[in-house]
Length: 303
Image (cartoon, rainbow, N blue to C red; front, side, top):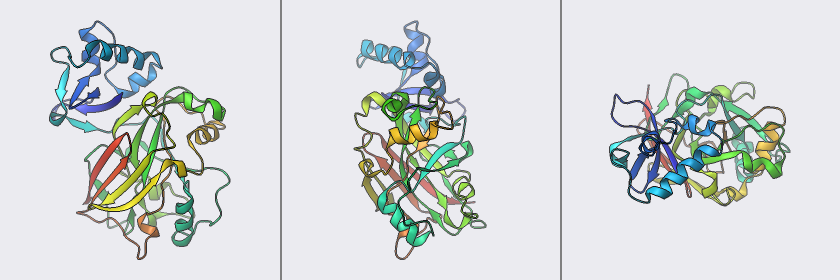
C-alpha cells in the first residue's frame, strides 16, 4: 500500500489516505463505510501494529476499484503532506553510509577518509519535517552553503529494543523518501545537529510504501536533481551499513518505537563534494526520487 497524509482544502485537517491510481481513499471514511474502525492518522495506523494495515488491505481487496461514495478523492484535488507531519521523536540520521560519499566528505568536509567501523548517527528534530512541495528555507544570515542529500527513509512499525539483524526487518512498517538538507558552514566542533536540524531541513514523502511491497530495500535506485540537472544517482545496495544493521545498531542502546524514522544516508554527488562546490540558493528547485516509492519536489526560498 502507498499511504499518504493529505489535506482536502486549505482549512481542512490532516487525514490518512491510501493511494489507488489517481485517487486518494480516506482510510477512516472507508472503514466507516464498512463498519470497521480505522484511524485517521498515519501514527494511529502504525500504532495498531500489523492488524491495522491488514484490516485496510482486506477492505481494499473487497472494494477492488469501486470505492463507496464519498470515500475517494482525486489526487489532483488534495494537498499531500509529509506522511508523518510531526514525528514524535528526532529523526535518526546516518552519516557517511556510502563509500563514495565517505571519500568526497573526507576531501571537502574534513571527515575521516577511513570507512566507518560503526554507523555514524546524528539526529534531526521533528521541526525539520516538511511535506511534498513545501519550501526549503534559505537563511542567508546563517548559511551560504546549503546542500542536498537524497536518502531512503525507513519507518519503524513495532518496538525494537536490542533486536538482532536477522529480526530487524520485521520491525519495519514501510519506506519513504527524504532529503537531508545541510548547512555545511553550520557544523560546530564536529557536531552536526545545528547544520542538519534547522527548520525545513527534512523534506519527506510523498508517501510511505508498506514493507510488504518493497521486496528488497537494498536494491533501489535513488537520485536527485537541482533545477532539472542530475546531481546524485546510486543504488541502496551500496550502503555500507544496511537497514537491518542500522536497526540492530541503534536499538542496541536506544529503543526504536512505532513511527520512528531512520534516514539511511546519501550517496556521492552532494554540493560540498563537487568541483567547484555547488550550493542551493533561493529560486532553485530540488527533486529527489527513490525507485518504487516516488518523488518529492521542493523550491528553495529566502527568509
